[in-house]
Length: 521
Image 1 (cartoon, rainbow, N blue to C red):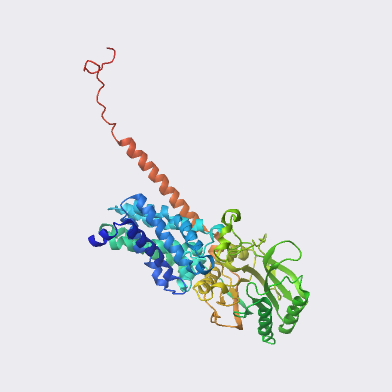
Image 2: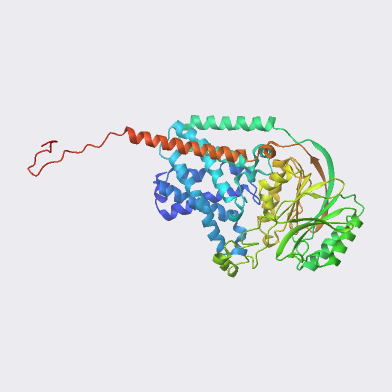
């Protein structure tokens, strides 16, 4: 330990260690998908922060760890954004600086049992505050929330229906804090073990008694994934070919991926007619996604458009939350130079104004989302409250085809399905496409990045209401209350200490004659 402490005495080595420690949780996400890693991955970072020599250094270690986490989570952006990826990681990593200071404040030195008990509540809440801030769409959205790493574990999906992905993140951080205390602080092991037992009991109760939406029907939905094809004309031809194979298979809805149509259908009526022919041949409506300059209003939109046997149905959803730098550049006047160092958007896409619930035939109501909108729990929760039967995500990660991005994106739909109790279809151009039931469990197999196919899924429908849909982000609100109470308590405690300190002794003033000054003399 002394050797390690000596090695970490170098600021540069300590910063590098913090960055590596911060990157470790990424192993729990796809593609490695070592989900169990999330329960201990924060421990090295916590131990480093706890032993920081000063609060300032702990904040800096928090920043470095956040930088490592964000860079590892988004490393697949490097071919597109190049050096700007490091800039984004550094800016977002700074959000963990206060959390680093907080870790040292509560666990540094020889904390009392009370401090450890407080840390088990405050540190997970502080982590949630970081995830809340970076979930703002302008900062890139909630991609890579710690709780999302548990997308394939059934107990975690059940808990997501109670408190959303936020609850999973909170519990994972609490578990990591308890493990870090058990490893490093013998005198505080009792509250750490008590915290683990309490967490296990609460989660078990939530898992056992939370209501489950009951399956009350099925629908057959087909996903058409053309694969990597250069050019919008060739892609449309391949999608058309694959869709015709679905004729006579009793499909209720056919879903194409994001940017599956590269032309505005109002400006290309022959394409709309070809889609209507496909709808008649298959007996199902087709949900396509148009990425083009609109003929009826200025600007480029990404839109989910429903086509039936008689042509365009009028059901259209314009994407509301755009990808920073990929679809628009924040503060373009200042950051427009990003287009010169990578593949940032040359022209900003236009935003839609509201979510849409589409009637797609036979009484089926679908809620479409486009691309990384599936990362936002509030959007699927809103659509569920509006009465959707099935959630649809249309995506394309073809730019990042040979990276971890396609699998990371496909995994998000599992959380959204579990949170809302509604099945979710994740349809892409080039993979990974996937479908999840109302409990978040995968239906059938993925269409991987090497597939060019049309696949039909028998999707169960459910219409109960989950606690998360009913109560919303209560976990976040509780975390903010915990942080506020702790801050108030610390303020009161500091004030009491200052008042209890004796007044410093001031020697009596002396006159020019060397005698103490006396009042009245």
